[in-house]
Picture 1 (cartoon, rainbow, N blue to C red):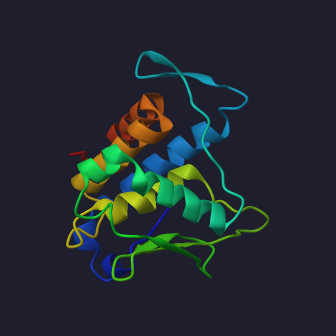
Picture 2: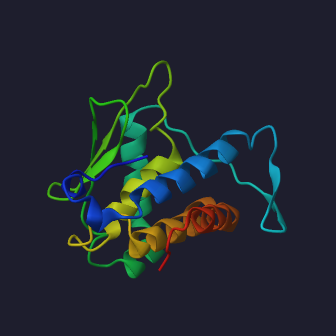
Length: 176
């Protein structure tokens, strides 16, 4: 779903990127169908999936990110980074979203064909997980995967977090 620009030249540092995107894509497809099929069986458990937020524009994404970073448990969990403001901007490329650590900017494409695929909670939480990490840890490693699962658990719900954990396990993604 997203590509961090500083990792592009050095793929060895970001060996989980492809597998993590595959896990996210799997979860996104399930969430896309959850309005019609809200109960799914995952790893032997029946889950009623919570609704995923979709955003109308960059302003609503900005408000959401500000609200997430203002949550007390987020600030307590990641005190070094949660207090740093994030800016949201449009990205011209339609294929990827990304996080720019130097400026704490989330760049989201608004359209791919007729659909604003990046204006969804899963994509935005992915970018927030980048923001909350150690600035030296720029990839999609185990620590990143753990932050993403923790955000899903605390914000979307434990069902979404379990769904992501199972998808990550299926893809061989290490989670710290």
